Image (cartoon, rainbow, N blue to C red; front, side, top):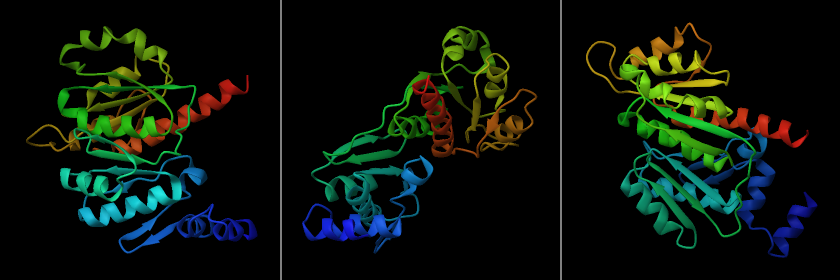
Length: 252
């Protein structure tokens, strides 16, 4: 604790950074930011913009940068993204409009670099939003990402054309809507861990991702499943597996 207080006194540590180190989180007028999550859990904390005003999102993003050097915002509209950029003019801003993510980094931030690769697979173009969110989380965790797009099981040949790549990566996140068959089929063809990401595409009975979720949960092949449209969770879970693989390679 004395080291932290001395660092604040000599100006090398801001009061916000000191609070985060002591309490494990930073308190703002818009909520609390879990600044210790990445150190504690190995997963970067995300600011869910959905349900927050642009100003609230920007306020927490500023606290995130002050305490960790980076802000990762998910489910961000154009207004959320603009507010974050305006509040952090000295940061590098990376916005993925399709994935609805915003990442702001200050000049001192360095991403980790893991020796592992995750494949992100989509059944169709409509699955790109959730898959993109997973991809951004993985990038922020330092994982290399290979994307395989639009290989739904309506034509199984599309999956088989990419089979060599699917077998080479360390982990797979497979996103699919409708009946959610793609993760099940893929898991039966590879020996890598597969994380099923059900997506809220489809219509009629079982639409909005419900049929996809149930189909993946009932898979007769071995895979894990996250909730509907839970790209952040799928990416974080794949990233944790990738980190374990990377650590094992480094210790060889």
